[in-house]
Image (cartoon, rainbow, N blue to C red; front, top):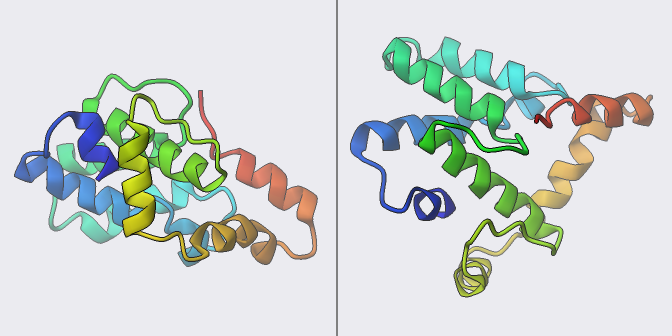
Length: 149
């Protein structure tokens, strides 16, 4: 995965478990909670759903990954930062100006060939406006809240 590439290795089992949970929940609030500003709802849902299966430290790291995966600047936590870079690459790749963060273009081309985009990002881009069809300006302003420095 892009995240493994940015980590420089396959994550160990505990980190992999945290990463898998964070990946499953990182954008979920956009659908489950009908929020254009979905980071908080996604992190809250992850904590609520996963509290019986993860330690407090793991839950905190899952929340950090979710809350910071749209952050522009680096995170001191290698797992958070790898996911952040991977998500930016995934998102900007669809826009056709990938923020590669050192990812070789051949790796990206191979990923694009093996996992077609299949309209997901088009649906993702339209989602805030489906949540707030009466107020596209408010939808746009709310979705801007997901970006962090």
